Length: 340
Image (cartoon, rainbow, N blue to C red; front, top):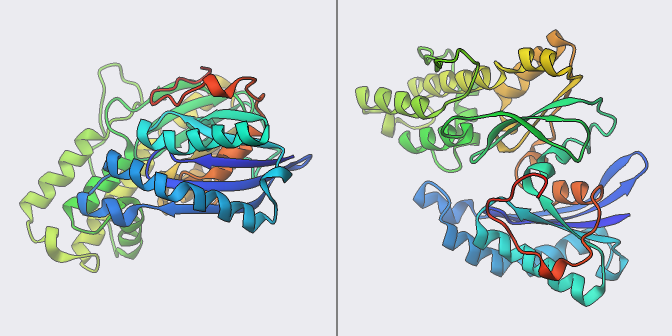
């Protein structure tokens, strides 16, 4: 089965052709148009600019994905597109395009939950992953831990109490004038550091649970920069900037993984999946591998190009879901709930 997957929930416009085989999904093509240069001057995504850019990109992205795969629309078996959650203007670009193509060609159509797509990004490298699995989905907008019984289900166990982990990376990079997006540049600085700066104090909660909060971490970085103003202009080659980035990265990684051992035992999990943009982080990948080996969990982390938003993950999820008999009456949903 050949599936064209489309994704434009935020600031990446992406299309991919995935071949679903008995041994799992096989990537035939992947095209992704980034808008980093557009949003960089603002330090974050501007929804209206993102939506307008998607309208300019969507036709070319789809055409290039088909060309790379060496097929035409008529050679596809199915269309899959992100239905939500996300920025509604951005979502509508590929969502509307996919419905138009389905109407014109008669191809089966599947609307996919964005987070279910991130889960299925792991299926390319680990199609035989044992379930149940703990699924840590972490990005600029999401920091959620789920229990998955298979590749098509997610049951929420916990989520951040305020900001997402990815936002802490972006805001730190902005305070240090390192560029946008923040995750890759903070990671590069951290890996260049000779030593870490003073550690950040982990959040504590009245209920005693190993929960997540990253709002205070952003404030802590801000206070350190205010105490040493030169850090804001020192640049990525400065040892103190590198040490601060390393300390931040170590804090985020350790905090993210802290709830995993207890929840894995409680839920009887056999594996751990980490996906989303922050799953590209080098420290998190190393720490997750150590934790998984210690706890006896199979570990699945997609390759970096499949961690960020992409059409391949949507196609992989769409291959497992039943087609919608009436896509024409469906609409994008910025706050789509799992199971909706």
